Image (cartoon, rainbow, N blue to C red; front, side, top):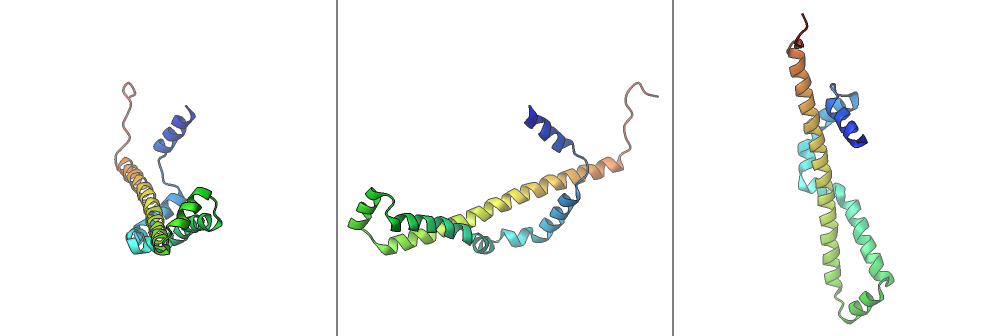
Length: 132
């Protein structure tokens, strides 16, 4: 019930806050630049490296005894390096792509609210029936 009230309050909120206005201005200027795949890859590299580093650390320390036994019998370092590069790229691009999608959704919601507010300002308030 509380979630419904919070969502209702957010939906019925009329004016954009100063923070929301600054976000709309920022996103209008930077949305195309942040959408480029190369930039998403560059900015997302730290999280990709962190995930692949954890995988490499797990392999090096021999955390899983069974995996270590299998790896010792048929290990190819090139396959590990290629897999880690693919993991880094996947996490880098898709984590930033997700963030871009979230920001785009937020931007579209704010713009819709802004257009609704502008329409309401242009139209005179309607009188309720029974009032004269």
